[in-house]
Length: 114
Image 1: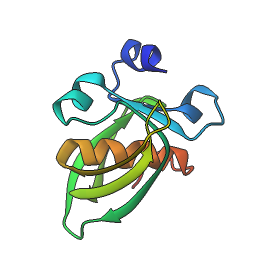
Image 2: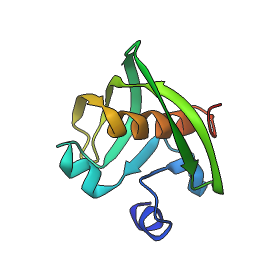
Image 3: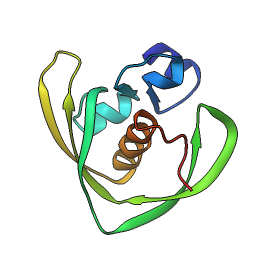
Image 4: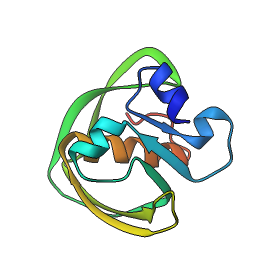
């Protein structure tokens, strides 16, 4: 999945986008390192969304060359397992929060939000 995401110049990729029925997504390694978070999330669950929202155009590897403004929470809390099976709880804000919400949406059957 990481290789496919990099080849496609994406910042995140969910397993169901590549035909895998798994609750896993990966995010860009540099984005993960900059925010001191793992780059793989297994069984992710967003447990809290801030009331403050921000709108930004989003694209999706499943819809090449399609961009749409999407309003998302500025901050979230997410829990998951990392690729070693360790429990993780993360407070994310800004672009990281947006990417985590986008990929979690995919795992929950949402292609792109309007």
